[in-house]
Image (cartoon, rainbow, N blue to C red; front, side, top):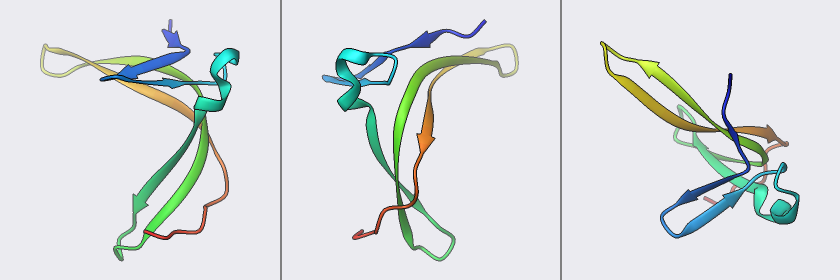
Length: 79
């Protein structure tokens, strides 16, 4: 079973997803990836939902909060 969430709060900011229809506008993101040649590529996306994943690392459970993202074509990079 996977635990899905429609919103994620980090500090005082709340991030939404497409399953939160009321806050769908807040589901758009822009992620920057640094390539091997130090070029920065920007990718727009839309968060579909947030979920948790738990991993057993040497007898210690570690929980991660992740997002399932629908990625779009790269945006022009202005750094």
